[in-house]
Image (tube, rainbow, N blue to C red; front, top):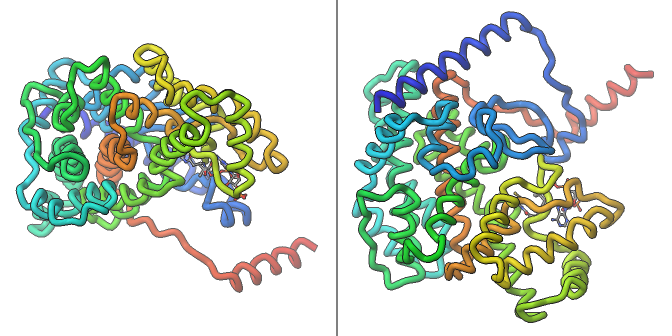
Length: 433
Ligand SMILES: CC(C)(COP(=O)(O)OP(=O)(O)OC[C@H]1O[C@@H](n2cnc3c(N)ncnc32)[C@H](O)[C@@H]1OP(=O)(O)O)[C@@H](O)C(=O)NCCC(=O)NCCS
């Protein structure tokens, strides 16, 4: 792990020096103002966190260290983790070192399987995923070292150590959950020759050579990896990490946020939406029929899953990457066809819906991802957010390692009461007159 450690060390020092210099030059600078509207709208747009693993441009989408989605969509999850945490893509030898470390650490402890098997079959797979990670918390090297009295300059190293231990186990853990809930419960062994995506495919029990399914899994694990620091799951994970809770606590917490329908669970919701369309209108609905269906959904007070975004203001480039995959591998899929018809009608409807109150009428990644999994026979759509989660933990781990390296303090914004607000706003009005 020496190569990875050395690179992360250099990156942390560089980021730390930059921040220190900026702070020395601009000690009293204002980054932005907080409006009453910010408070009412879930802190939308408030710049209040530093995150260097990735950045979301409203009009160009996800950037990882200067690379846009088309630049990295064909990489592997291993390469992407290296990129997130070090800021550069790995050389051949760096990648070999990381891959071999992950292979060595991939065994999920028996007690985790025992615990997961004891749960009711009605449980949601995301609950199992989060519990499985949480159950391994006692394995944390950071926790052990901290209890022994660790210097704070070393915190990041053991957070990275824990991260590698956790990431290595994710394909096995996630695939095991699929086998327990939806198959006969037998756990398929890992193949030490395979990478993270290959192992996931094999352990799920799918044919690895089934016309691109493994390629789809690889793309899935890459595209969902990180989306800067303020989204529900990453922010939750960062908050928990900031209390010096170990990565198992922080990842499990982040995944609980990902499990919400307005966030990661939207991919499940989207597939459900599409299967409902097919159940009602048949497998080949017309564009007009879909338009009416969408209007009715909105009139019933529901959101159109997979459309809208808190930051993006264009079609999500991750949606485009999946569309390219679908056009290449399964253009005839009825699910993909319906995704395309929705893309034809939903943006125009949302642009004018209720006076145009929807900030972003364009599709996000969830509008398409599930339809491709469904095409390949993964029809248990409750499982899709787990696939998203495997990938997103890469981002949690990278963000939390760097935050520890930069000695970022415990996150603790101030909340105010209605009466504080009233007094504050009235005093401002008086001062203004
Ligand atoms: C992603 C999402 C939560 C962003 O929320 P946001 O930043 O508050 O979005 P907006 O500023 O556009 O919200 C303004 C209004 O438009 C509505 N709106 C936003 N997206 C909508 C959609 N896809 N369908 C219908 N209404 C939508 C909001 O519910 C809100 O209505 P309200 O004022 O009655 O509460 C929201 O777009 C959404 O719920 N989308 C569907 C779920 C989804 O795809 N989530 C995955 C995100 S990656």
